[in-house]
Amino acid sequence: MKTNLNNNTLTVTINGDLISTTAERLRTEINALFEAPPANPPAWQLLRLDLASAKMVDSVGLNFIVTILKAVQKQGAKMQIVYANQNVHRTFLFTRLDKHVELVDGLMNN
Image 1 (tube, helix red, strand yellow):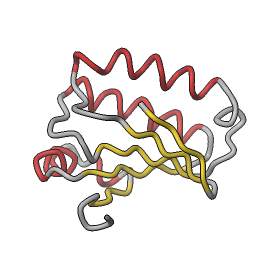
Image 2 (cartoon, rainbow, N blue to C red):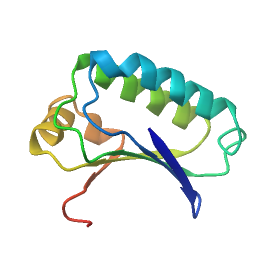
Image 3 (tube, rainbow, N blue to C red):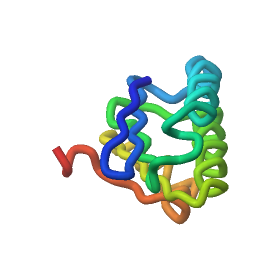
Image 4 (cartoon, rainbow, N blue to C red):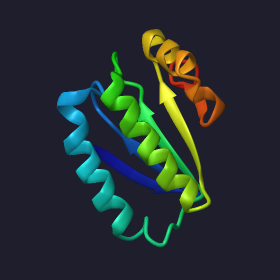
C-alpha cells in the first residue's frame, strides 16, 4: 500500500487484488494511517482508493471498502475508487457501491 497527499486528496494505492488473504493486512495499515498525521486530523477532503491493479474484489474486500467509507464519511470527507478491470467495476455496480462513492475508470484517466 502506498499513500500520497496532494491538493486535499489522500490517495491510497493498493497493488493487487482486494481479497480475504490481503484485506486484514490492509485493514491494519489503513487503521494506522487514519490514526497518524496527515490523516488525523484529516488534511484532506477526498480519499482516492486506487484499485487500478486489482482484477478481483471479493466479499471481504467489499467489507473492507465499506469500513473505509464509513470512516471517511465520519470525518466529513468523500471517497473515490479508481478501477481498471471491468469485472471489478461490475462488482461495484452489482453491490450498488456506485451510489455511495465516485467510481473512476483508471484506463480512461491515464
